[in-house]
Length: 294
Image 1: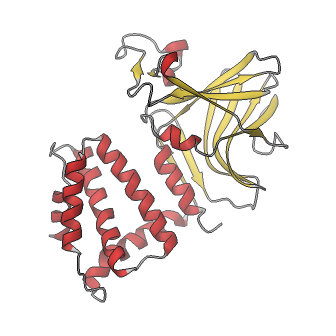
Image 2: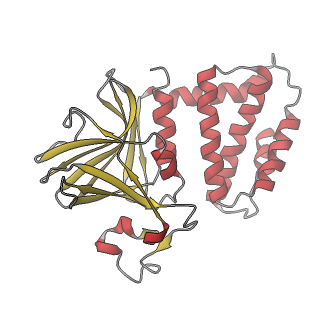
Image 3: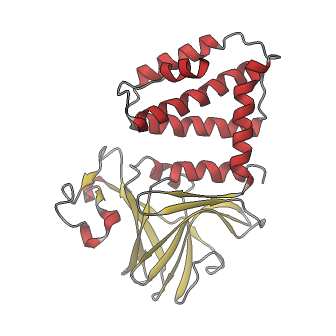
């Protein structure tokens, strides 16, 4: 009965839509666990951090599926009233938190998970070496350019990284994506599928006009370009990006992509690839959680 009541508290107006109902129910369960833990301090700090990230991600997707702020606030108030003075020694109180903890540790036990999107997959993994290991990555291939983008652990700490192999020698790289302030909604360049995407690249179907784009330039380069580069022939290069790059990417729609443009020392473009946003939020949550003890 409690579960049904909590799900109802955060139920979306479009009842019967499975996607919306699932998003609502998951958010309600996580909020219930957080509310009990606030009163009884059952979870370890690292577990609480994981829970908070999961709540943020669940709320993000629930809102994308139609959850309003008013509905969320009303549901949150109802859950908090239900658990305002819990008996912290009661098994009934601890049960939702225990179930969450068991599920979380089971989720993290394997140390690696793949998160499929519309066309690409993010892989999140535990770093098995103190340095020189990906913790979150998506592979991309366009023409003769192979790339891997995500976050990696190097000697100086975690970095946002792009590693490529190309027949040309890349000297710099830039991420081009929609600026959500200048272009709040993505443009469908295929007009609902009636036209081919720009350049025939499916991941270029959604985005922004040039006036609504932002460009994020590299912030550095690894000394060992080949350390984390994709396997294969050609020249390798590994570029770092600003620490908030993933947050800016997560503000986009899951079907959108960030375009990577590679330039040589003369400033000529020598290649490009696309990185799908896809399930970046969930994959990043897992990568942060599974590497929390490092």
